[in-house]
Amino acid sequence: MPFYVSPEQVMKDKADYARKVLTRIRSGVVITCDAGILFVAPNPSRALRKFSELYDRIAFAAVGRYNEFETLRKAGVRYADMTGFQYDRRDVTSRGLADWYAQLLGQLFTDSSKPYEVEIVVAEVGSSPDTDQIYRIIFDGSVAEEHGFVVMGGQADRVAEVLKERYQPHLSLQEAMGLAMAALAVQNEGAGSDAVTGDQLEVALLDRSRTHRAFRTVAGPRLDALLGEAKSPAPLAASADASLPAGAEGDSQPPSDEAGEAPSST
Image (tube, rainbow, N blue to C red; front, side, top):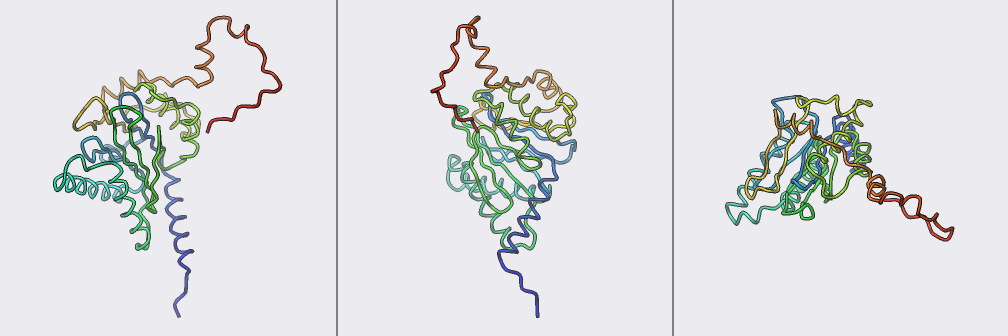
């Protein structure tokens, strides 16, 4: 008689397999700034691309097995073009694409013997950072809306911890690049961000100033110049201390014992 395996065990084995594969790859970062939405990931290959355009102001980012997320990217482009052609270009949204990807990956996860070893992000740039939309979809079809930044694959928890501590709204493009490099340096076994050159990175930007075809790659001299200008934003505590007038520290009174401890930000 054939061996029986419960559906719960099958789903667990698939999820463990895909999760284990994704933790062995290098992380990618998507972060919002005043200039738009910045995409940064280590990628020394000139043939493979992790970031690409899906539609007018919508971009696709992915990590994992290249042939699998490239198939998803092409399918997403066809879906977006068909939707815009049959209805209206305004009907093509990042939320609609994220839901479509979630349904597709969920069906593949359930029906296929092996799940797709991918983690993807669909991002849409708005007129201001507050209107940007970022959706993260993982191998089993789970979709989550992210705000400010998102980390894909690899040591995502360690990289995201750096971003949580130092991310601030309305970063400049140079500050966002510096913060992304500092966060990605965590997975380089203590190597500083200065050790990474432009040839080892893939960088793209959804340019907020463009009304049409907002996606553009940043490479060559432009990337070298951005790396040279990149600066990491100061921590929030340091920024607050710097804003105090001279001598304010000496005039401040010690807190009373009745004051409660402020909850830490997460």
